[in-house]
Length: 134
Image (tube, rainbow, N blue to C red; front, side, top):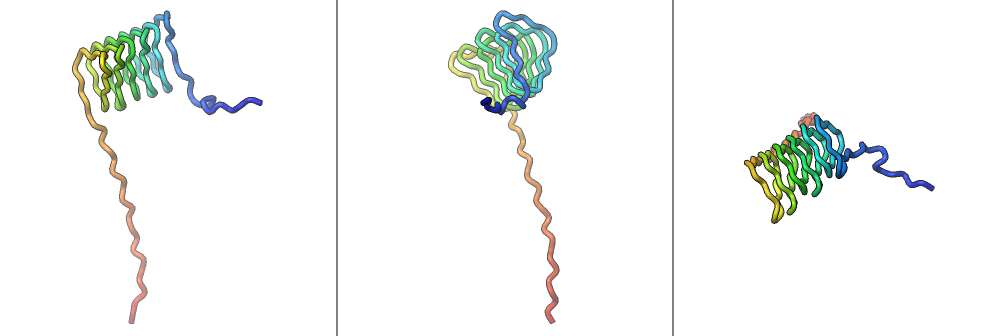
């Protein structure tokens, strides 16, 4: 009997594998992993991972970004940028959260802004009519 895979209905991840070279513009709704080389623009609504063997000569936008390889270009995320101990970013970063592990390199300017929390709307309370005393 086959088990139903919960990911079967989710979007497929995109992979640029080790030894592959791609260039152009990538727009994806799901996650992207680069273990090869990519040159161009990346706009991803999911997580972007540049693996240890990966090199991205591009500007990257993503929900969360992990750099274990080499990125030459600017990075922008409203989430978290993690540069691992083997990771290197040569470019400017604009992020909400920044983590650089010991040995990781950031050669550029970092800009961090907190995401403003939206205050919940207060529900209007309706006054219930009170019976008149009298």
